[in-house]
Length: 285
Image 1 (tube, helix red, strand yellow):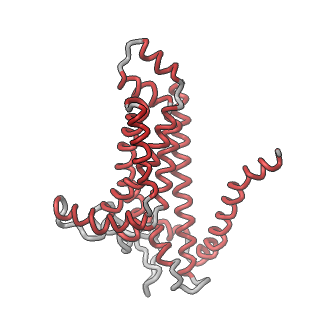
Image 2 (cartoon, rainbow, N blue to C red):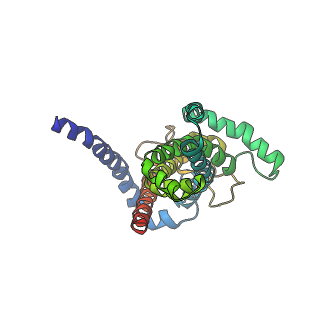
């Protein structure tokens, strides 16, 4: 039984090792022809054009822009809904609201993409930004934020419910109000779980494909203007992965180079989150 459980635990490690091997085996061949410095610093990305440029910065900026917009929607709304469900909502309301909120996670992402393209973008252009293009980062980011909202809310609520009841009762015994208990006792005590929820949401947003491929556009631009169309790393990988590029060509290997960069970006965000949690725990103690 011990060996069986150990084998189950090693599945994730072996899967990660397989992913790294698949990415790095082709990425090494790509970087033999294109220098890493050029890949990281060049400001244009046109590997499929006659005049080729291999700077990943436009794809990285588009990915970060849509992710920041999505997190700007999901984190505050998710935390507020989690605080309400764990600290304020009666049991009957919680049983109704939580499943309704989690229904959003079951909607296919392609539906979200067409919703952003056919409803959110025209609405924003008509009421707020008439100069905005049909394909833009803002509508894609907003709808992506709604998509990952249940992840932030549900996992954060679970972390808050895991806080011992004695901490709440001790705060109430000292005269604290409900909002003070929620914000100054429960929220700090559940911070590690909340940060984990946010990190999972960030990783989900970084890896989202269909919403950005449909609503954000397919033109790589080095810009942080949310009203313009952008191309993300995942959208480019879909473009190359359609099968039009010859297998083993330099253009084909850009798919793995971009995938490696996306893997490194996700790892960086996770490492940063772990560092923040560890530092906060030291100060809190």
